[in-house]
Every structure is written in C-alpha cells, then in structure tokens.
Length: 196
Image 1 (cartoon, rainbow, N blue to C red):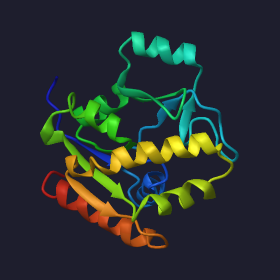
Image 2: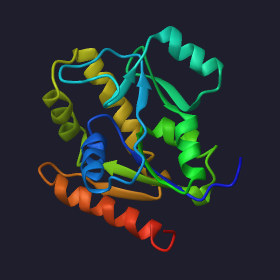
Image 3: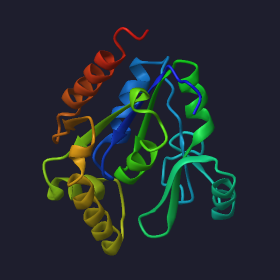
C-alpha cells in the first residue's frame, strides 16, 4: 500500500457501547477530522437520515461493491444485514495526512488492521460495566425482537472478550459519557501530538 501519513482511529465495541455517541461529540469539537460513514443494508430507524449515520443501500448494490473490492471491511451483522466501511475515502484521507475517526465492531477492527499499516492505526475499545448494562442501553434505543436482543448480547460477550486486542480500553459507565469522551479525546490528541 502507498505511504500514508495520517492516522485512523477506530472506535471499537459492541452494539450499544456508545461508539456513535463518542463520535458525535468528537465531530462537534474536531471539525477538521474525517468521519467516514458506513454502508448498510438494514432499514432506516426512526429519526435516521440516509447519508448521516449510514449510507442505506440495497443488498444487490452492497454485493456489487464487495465484488469490486470497494470495502476496507464488511460483515453480516445482527441476522441478515450487511455493514461495511468503504476503502477509498479512508485511504485517500490517510494519504493526505488526515486524522480519520471511524466506529467498527471487533470483526471490522480485525479486518482493517490486516490492511492499514500499524503506524497509521490506533484502536480504542469501548467497555461497558456488564451485559445487563448493555441490554438496558440497547432497549432504550427502541423496539427490538427478543431473539435479536439475545443475538446482540451473545455477540457483545464475544467482543468484550477481545477488548485486549485493541491499543486502548475506555470505560463507558452509565451517565458518565462526558468522562468517556474526554478519555477518547486525550488518547487521540496524545497519539497525533508531533504529527501535525
């Protein structure tokens, strides 16, 4: 891969761990960073807009993008929905020396670290106190089928067991998101110190 001078920060963790909340806070404060948007085949939720949290596309289009090697990573998550990180936007930004911040699950992290050079990649795992806490967070988001909830909790248990694979672990305790965001900010600023 061509030489890159930027840094890709992966915010890693299970569904409901606060990845999206942390990224929204970073977007408000660090407008010069690049925040790529995922592609997914899942249905839009209430209050979501295409092109904001996700690019919502058909399975047919997603499969075409896979065939054309357009993804840095992709996975089939939560039953039958595809999620993926487009390669071009991130690689171009890193070549240009940008700070890129992206949320992924643990599968995505493992796939990306096989492609992006070690010196350009920093991973931050979002830990939650326990699975019961996570269950409450997922249920607060809205209606979810019991089998889907169980599937997410099973996936979360596997992800939490791999937290140590990441460079950093940040605890996101209930009601303490500002502390969590401050810790993530500190990691990013320390990692890019001297680069820019």
